[in-house]
Length: 483
Ligand SMILES: [Zn+2]
Ligand SMILES: [Zn+2]
Ligand SMILES: [Zn+2]
Ligand SMILES: [Zn+2]
Image 1 (cartoon, rainbow, N blue to C red):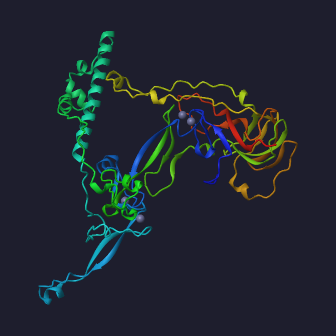
Image 2: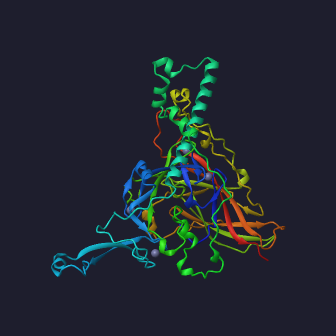
Image 3: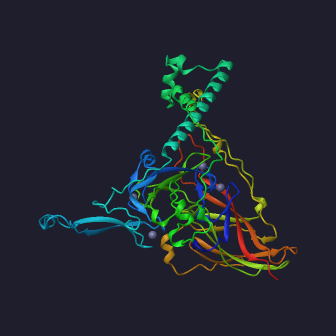
């Protein structure tokens, strides 16, 4: 695995044409293709607070505006705030008798404090609370009413457009004479059908559109105060831009007006192959768990290429490149290095239709345009040629116990430097083009043909073979061309 600060020297070409390190890629065992974050489908599984680990369904998260109700971030430095307890002495009543004061017990009170910048809720005059969690005064958004108006209006518009599309489709089918409406068949009324489909009635949406008052631009604006340009500015009292934007509803200009920020919720997401709809990753539901139920990472399925060392790349010169190849799978792997141009073109078959005919007839079918994965081959640099070894290499399966073996096999030759369990080191000869310019990035492209055994249990309808020949292309960063 790469260090976070280290650049990625070896990048794999994703099916969609993106160049990514192997640790950022997925491998669909059903399509047998590499996928990256750009060409998969991201789904939210659950919402949770990363601080108190409370999780909630998405409807509740939406109600709470995707924020935790018991955790707060510092409005000054955005660190998580901690609750501090303090003993409140009963207030001395100057006019009252002493007997009254004696009866009052010291009470525990709570306030919020930032351990990073020492901001406290007392700084801005928020009274201490008698309970440790919750109960903090909530400020209402001054524009809440307008926001709900806008939201209703746009919901109504979306609803109207959906209805129009539905009517259009229905007409189209009716003309063709093939369409039997659900209402004809079952005696349902249109309103009932809409109800079943989860659409609100059309009357309420049209009234929301009719009653909507659009905003208007005006030239009358409040004058700036007289001393606006002459008043001395104390930067310690004025909030920074990030501090203002962290609370867009209020955008406090003065530090004394900052309020604790309710902590935004995090999500657990699962990822799906867009082509075949199978899960590539699926996390455990429990927010405290970092484990996955499904985890199809390229790192476990595609041979890993690492640079051991290389000689300086010079225009018109030859240099040696030492690579380490690793077989991460539990099966023996046959490998062959080929030129990137020799990778055969593969056409992906159309995905199997999962829409049901009823959904189709109601025009409620899924929009499947997002499922088209655009396959692209990036323009790869061709300045450096690799003199590939014209031989097939065999890599043993991954064996975790072999990690502790010291003896590496030395069945070496000109190409294979050493071999150890599921890894081997290769010496390649690079030839640089004469026209390469000094200072240009030196990048070599290598394609690998490898055998892959699919361990997906074959389904009754599947005609898939277990053994496949797959290809992957890697771009190796070798610094700059130098003299
Ligand atoms: Zn797939
Ligand atoms: Zn991709
Ligand atoms: Zn929380
Ligand atoms: Zn702070």
